[in-house]
Length: 457
Image 1 (cartoon, one colour):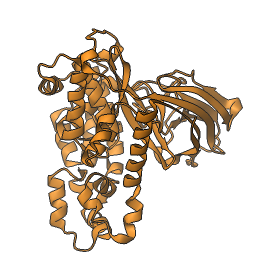
Image 2 (tube, rainbow, N blue to C red):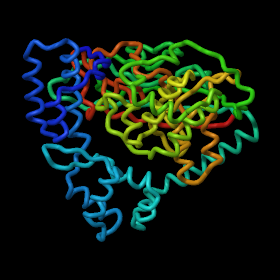
Image 3 (cartoon, rainbow, N blue to C red):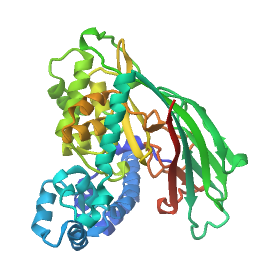
Image 4 (cartoon, rainbow, N blue to C red):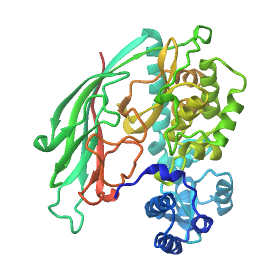
């Protein structure tokens, strides 16, 4: 079934909101089904159908009850971790939780999120577990080394060699059925060029999207009796930017990068008020963008998010909770920039450092006469919290080369259109898979990214 995500902007009926807040999943689905059986407005029907898809994701995102959460916390920090401390963390919105059938449940990665975002808990990790969480400091050192190299050499070119593999586990009743397996590819635009596909696991069954397609993929259509894989190289060219506000041109631009794009890039009353509060009477576009960046990086705490599909308005969620992951921060930056008259756009895919590969989102904004500049509020906010003001300033206007951008536009379809509702209908980092009549269950899809080589050239 095709879903139009713009209907996420339709408010839910109050009884549905109350049941969802309590987490009464059985009654909630029953009430929605009764509403759908009636002659109701088309827009409300579409919103309720989307809500049923969201509700299917909800319990899986919050698997840990109170006792399991305490067990994990004590195993990590020591047996003296109290239930009162967990309650204080919940009051401070420092651990992600929800009601599932009237009982508190915690998000699947709540513990790692706590360690990642609050140094006092990182320092409390028991000695035998500390190596597991040492990545953050090594990662920061690598980024600082890159920043100094970029400043020193002004422009730097890198070449990255990668392989992505998707393995689909057998699904009962689907034996022998073909799937459409969409694996992300680098887009040849902005800082990326010389993209070369070296090998495909099923070359006769593959459709490769054009080099600049907004959510670029290779789509395999075959029986998943062996993993799907693609191997490729690409180059990244980055310049060190230090734009001068006094040299900025106030050029009015009307383009898709300045407009709303429902259901998420929407100029809601609250976001209008927030933008006015942040920007004030400032008229210089660069200074306005910097004020927005400063707000996001200094006033918001990083936090892992549940599936974006479960949030009716992603940037407003971040702007009201004042917590966000990389994608929520980037989308809030884009939305506030557009509200302030500054063209801004999405760039997302993977962080592909020699240390690790992970999903990541960031942004670009346009300032004349400098053109498109980069902004990574997530990395900038991390630097600010660590007291590294040089790196905090660097990520306003600049970017590191440890990126594989697979999406240049938020909420764009694939080149071979996806017929069903994607697990992530907004972004494309780990790929998606579907049968003719249904998406492959997310838990049956495993995608691995490997950096085979990384070199400065």
